[in-house]
Length: 284
View (cartoon, rainbow, N blue to C red):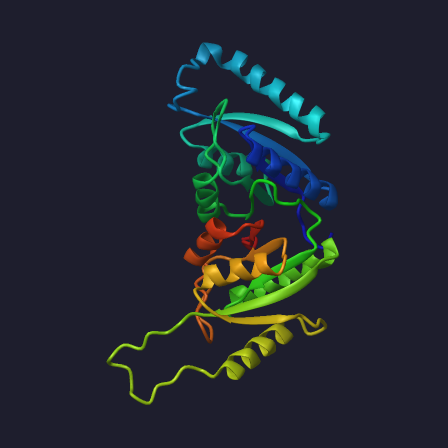
């Protein structure tokens, strides 16, 4: 692997979506030859775990350990298991990620109540916002790694250039096809704009995107898609219509020729996407 993924952390509450996240994590851990840690978070004050007193903690942890053992046996996966207590699953994941020096955090979405609750929808968004490392969000039933078709949204900023180069290295490791999408949002011109203002021509936009991709990946011929739409909606629609199985995006993108605000937009992609979303955060 050209990417330095050595420690992977996955959160699970034993719901079906979170078990799918474990399967993604196990496949990636094998591919990367990385260590895998699976975390169950007992959320303090949760309706199901509030009665677990300190005196019962060892017994409760043993019960969760039995669930982990059953998970390993049923799905033939291997990981180090951790059981942590915190005021939120998000806090537990971030604290454990720091403890194990994780390079990648994997979460499932739409998790529901299990033995103590790990709400893997809102948790995923919280982890994406606050994690210092990359986060992979997977939906229930989505195929796991190795991914075969990777889509990368770019806004022509330096940050999205770094994300594109990272995605290209993932594509090389997975033996996957790589494609780029740039989305031009419909522009409503306010009354104070000059009357002679006009938006860039489609050919001009496409040329700028092609040149941007060529500069980032000079030795590769990467397909480029240019869409006119709301950014997150356009990216997710393209991914599903053309059978991409992974979206790799970044956070806090800067303004390029057209704007892809890869902070809030990344979270919208996370919520809307029917395929796994890899939120890249460069080390440091």
